[in-house]
Amino acid sequence: MHDKDESLALTAALKALQQGETSTALQRYRDAIELLKVAHQPPDSTNEQLRLLWQECARQGQELELACRLNAALCLIKLEQWTEAVDQAGEAVRMDDKSAKG
Image 1 (cartoon, rainbow, N blue to C red):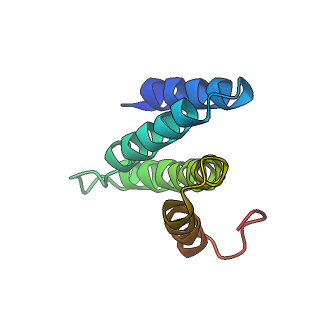
Image 2: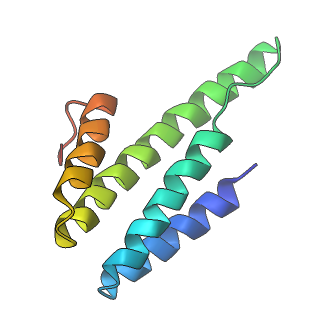
């Protein structure tokens, strides 16, 4: 599974953002979003326990992806990349229209 990769990408993104390295942070958030898409594909199995576990992992993955998209939008705003910022924020709103940041 890609949990370690996701965690490393998120940690690197947060560290870069805290250090004012906005472009680097943005790329790390984009990396994390892509890893989350791959890591949370539905299993090819009829095993009910496996499917329930996948559903919980997918829910957690969506929460992480939402946070990554919102933080990517923040980075894009700081970089004055308005169209892309709106796109990322729009994706976040589509994921959760009740998001605190959305």
